[in-house]
Length: 201
Image 1 (cartoon, rainbow, N blue to C red):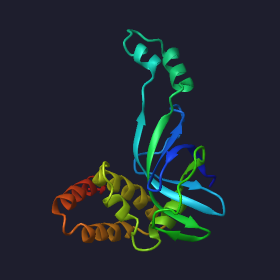
Image 2: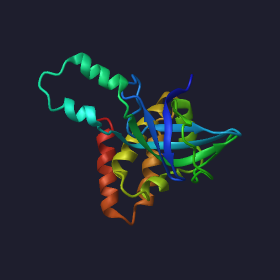
Image 3: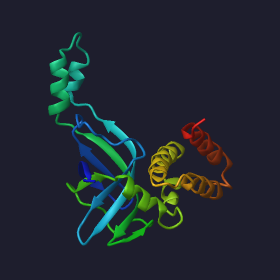
């Protein structure tokens, strides 16, 4: 499968980065999706999308106050606007050659680097390597909705593992999260509530 490019890097540090793309892209990744940034020497950084937002600009502020805006004007603004749609990404690991690590990457990506949406195979490979070490990056992150992000990610990863004939991945992931949060009852209850919403009846 050809990797789907979703945008280019705007800014980054070791633990997070922000990606910009056209608001009118037809295939935009969802909250919780895993993305990859390929760098040099077969070095790739992986992350999870934890926020998606569109900032306003001067023209939008003027247009929204008008009545009966022409659909062509709206379409033109979405296609040609100067302010991009932005994805905020939490770094959760990296790959050097064929070895996957759930540690933070040794260095951040650079401005204008291409960002790609991980396909099912990449998602399965990353989430089945090691023993869910990347969960700690999510659980220790401030200013993000941990339960919602984990539920969205686990739902997407679960579907990828089901396609490969491994329906039990979600049970292993849930058990690991219960173990990690056993001393934080409010966080555990919040997470289990979010996970309950993604499980089939």
